[in-house]
Image (cartoon, rainbow, N blue to C red; front, side, top):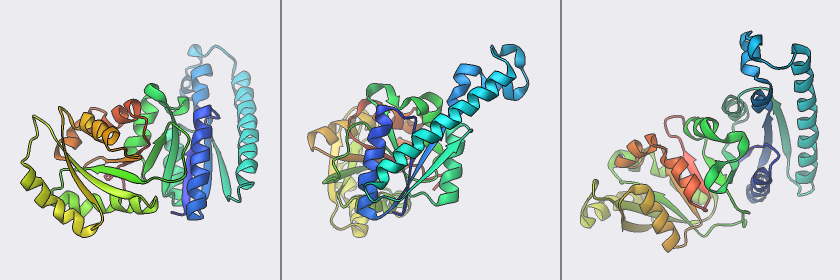
Length: 287
């Protein structure tokens, strides 16, 4: 892991993400990229209307809008400089990015240009990811990011002992998905736990599941194998993680036959919103 990106809206949760990124960067001698986008200013001055030429819907003049953008940009750059200075006291190399783009566009641009290995985002309890990344922006980042995305709610302790990865362990998933999940566990020097959740609508006998898990364990021999029964995959992941004291959850856009369908119903957002554990999501279609 060489490059970590932290989208930052200067909130308390963004500070938690920065602190987590610093600890991870220390472990891997990585560079931290901190990004702020003022696209959210559109909520105040309706920049979308301004950009499209629909001035009738704006409530301030063009000069006022441009001046406000200038002030917000200056403020953001000052805040980014202060964060950079603080991180550098921890002997971390930091690069800042101030953007005037939609958040998900800015993130993907920085990821591509700087070979980002991991995005770290702060999140607000049951209300989802931090204000800059709420709603459709959050969904776009999680679903379309070209690298793993770590969402974190609480202060990062600096190490994880156990990470759980849920899958149906079919052959294509073992070949394509599990290596990426397993490598993430190696990044964090954590015990990898393979989990298959049986549900009433997607049930498989334990003997068949364990046989398929053996293929995955050939790639990661030290991984622990688990089968858990629940009414839905996401509830099973949460219940298992709480019961067995997992430190983090890895989720992919596929890796479960039922999971692909559930992801279309916002399973990642469900886990982020209802689980206090860190969630690492991997969008394999974009990887």
